[in-house]
Amino acid sequence: MEGIYYAIRRLPNLSPEQFQSHWLKTHGPLGGRHLRTVGAQRYAQVHTLHDPLNEVLRASRGCMEPFDGIAEIFGGP
Image (tube, rainbow, N blue to C red; front, side, top):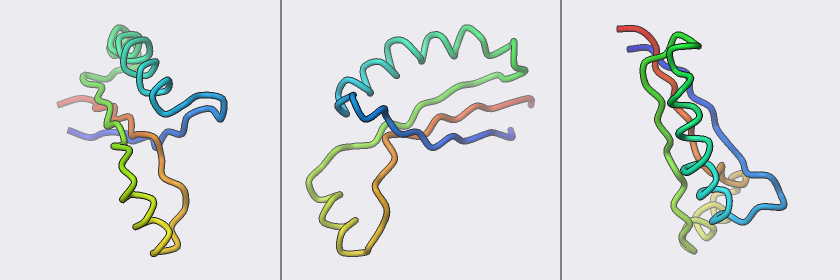
């Protein structure tokens, strides 16, 4: 099954907790209702785990700021 993946960042005025709550409780059900409209069969969200160790690893490796999650939309069979 082929898919499309979107790396997502929250708006600057939202805390990570506010973003995850909105994405899960509002956007998730909305996306699920419109799957067939866009020719998709499955929608999944992968939420970032916020742990202090993430920042230590990111800084030590010179990586960019983390995304807040990944949205996955899967199409036909």
